[in-house]
Length: 259
Ligand code: IPE
Ligand code: IPE
Ligand code: MG
Image (cartoon, rainbow, N blue to C red; front, side):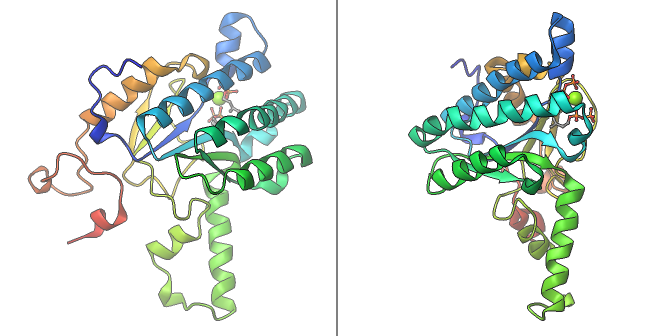
């Protein structure tokens, strides 16, 4: 691995990725969109692999949004097939490398075979202590927020907690990402300057990195570039430059709110 000056003591704890541009990649190459998604799978493998080798603790991958259900049936079907295949093939590797898989999103909408394969992969890798990979499937940030509000409202109605108990900590604990620290770095490929309903609550101070590289072309070199750029950023969390004593801070609610 060519790390090109990467400081391994200052890596993001949590990297999130909006893996976009498979369709454009395919169009440029005169191939089908499905072929683009197939190539995108190889980039997923590469990024998981490098993250693990570098010792990044959490990697979130936005693989299929709530809105992506609106795509042509054939494409949705093919994406689901690729996903199921990926989960089946990668499971032994996840076990070998101690990777824990978590799935976030409205899993009930997934076709039964994908739902079962996913559930199986999550159960099998549950005790793994290495990197955690969060797969966002049928996920949207707003949907996550709606489910969080419903869950908290239910608890208030049942008397489990009071309205006054609701604070940032409780909200975070009721999101799909509960117990996962906020992303330090959010990468979006293919150049779009938007969040496309990915994490909304979770990224108040996340560093954004948008590259024109299309997802199937995003491999080790591009990933290392994103990490290097992250290391050049000065994270202030709302404070002044002078108040920042440590050269590096990761997203941690404690650090942000501490007086
Ligand atoms: C990302 O690539 C994959 C998914 C959203 C599932 P796209 O399919 O969105 O590719 P573009 O944006 O059309 O190039
Ligand atoms: C975002 O990409 C969703 C995923 C990468 C899963 P889209 O291609 O769906 O986003 P828009 O439509 O360009 O905003
Ligand atoms: Mg897209």
